[in-house]
Image (cartoon, rainbow, N blue to C red; front, side, top):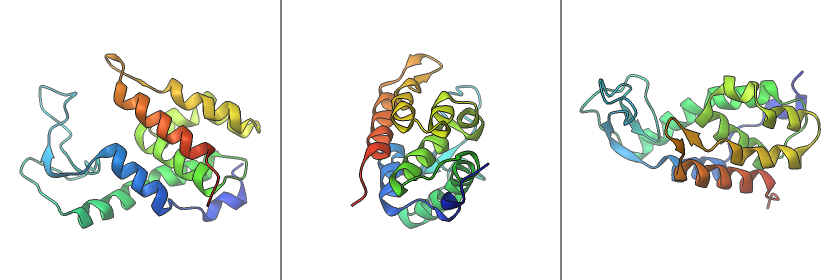
Length: 157
């Protein structure tokens, strides 16, 4: 049962700025480096893939608009799956995490189970476990999880 206090939360500018740094801006479409055969999906902006093909370009403003749209699924998953009240920074960190790993992975995670059990500190420690790609531990994911964990544990200004 989702917590009613979370129903009004959306990604703050602080969380959006973190994702922008973590994803990096690409104004020209590029192929998925993990798929050497087809390059699908093509990606642009801050990790946007829907409707993208070779040769597409975008502005930073368009990339930000796409990011806000693309984040809606992650935000919805956090609002739906988390049973305890969240701070804005916790919500932002979790939405960034879900944006990267997907709602299904989050739904089945120890991170979510610990959070819903009231163990926010234990949940925070779970971020660092999500640092692997197909080829093992990825430095970029180590850095991303550390940034998300730090945001999760931060006190709001």
